[in-house]
Length: 100
Image 1: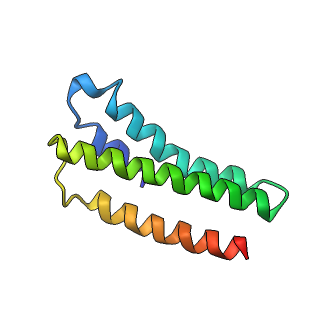
Image 2: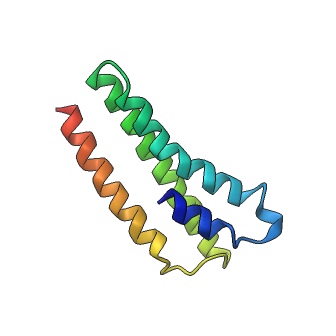
Image 3: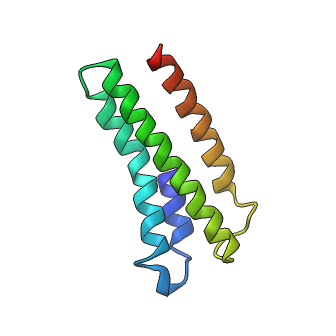
């Protein structure tokens, strides 16, 4: 997903390099980063917390990509949206499992 976000945001207008493109990339990188950090923690409670943070970053990323589509920077039916949905499903399932 992160690689796809970088590829998509590479085609954003030049004036978005330090704006929306940068925000999209940071939100995308935040998802696996929080998974990694949470998995390295000592307890399930801490892991669950970082999974929640990752889900928040994913939601932020989805919003930013929807804005990007609204601005015409990518098609509304781009594959990235299906990828986001799949990652959300996987994160949700993992979060439910860890929270039990």
